Image 1: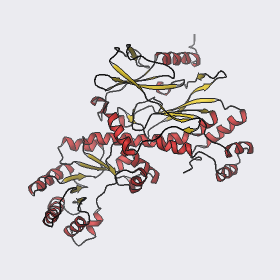
Image 2: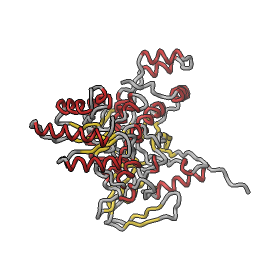
Image 3: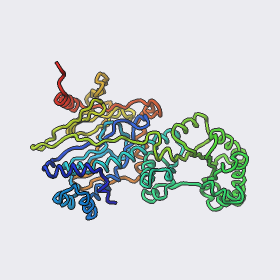
Image 4: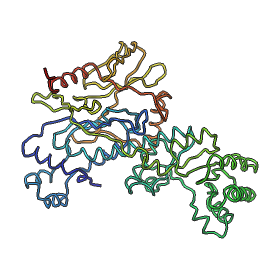
Length: 483
């Protein structure tokens, strides 16, 4: 789909201003976020494949030009320029599924000013949404402690795109499948589901509804048991059907019950005893009913006999943290000699002061355990020797310092080239490959960093060279104190 006009009007009016003034030098823009959603200890990068599709299809159609002309704010010479517009710059990004932290550039755009300005809105729209849902999914999956988590929030998502790409992001974050059939087709991910209460209600009685469903889907027979009375009707009827299926020669494999209301801890434990006593200890008990990571965590503490979780509204909307908050800021402008002149945005809010220059990110791991120690943002071209000791310090609370002994740590650069001179040089992995990559990356976090509340903070530090460049710019642009 051509999403070229998926942009804020001011991107186009600024573009025309750059065009008229001849101000189109090469610049560096960083897309990053400032705060982890949900009070989490990390976020999950997602959405890069859709950014790639957007950039590849970036062009103004005759209909787009006609519409812009109808606004009566754009001159014909500018519209002529747009009619042949193509992205010609470079893009670097952190691969999808990577654990990321505040102030790290998730996407870096190096391009002529007009091009870099135009792509801001769409990049933020795509990265913000999918990173938010992938992060929420990772929290829910962590709370489930190894149980399968199914995403089925399509009917509650904020529109078709949010449902489809939210399902994609949820899979990257660790879900085992989705109810969204279109997402299954588009992204080649498992689609899962049972049946609704309406199925039960459409039959003369609950037993007949269960028996009919079981004969139709003997290899995926999960029965919804709370339409009338969970323990006095639903579970006994499910057990009756399971026994009859066995007597008819069916081998029950993927089977069980689903709870969608009531006290899930109490009902699941009672149902477990009933199923075990009837000879079905391997029957799965799944649950839904407005679940999120906090309720799942609570049910786990109550030793609920649930091993499969269906999570809808609260996941697909990231209900308690509905926005990711990513921003896109100018970091450098290329000077006449071809070197980048760093730029900085000041603010009375310390967290909103940007990091200047053309940067990259290094992830530092403890060599012995492979666990993540810290991230280091440096200027492009800086080199580091892991055989030498490294001093790290918090760029805001600079008295917080640590020294890593040489040979005790390893480093990996996170930003990878995606576009060079307008041509895509990156191949996106499949969603299921990204899911595994995300799982492996999450395993590099210490358990303390994955706590749902008050997680340990992973520090994102600046190299000394970048830190002193930033301080120099702060001194240069900050107003002098009054005498």
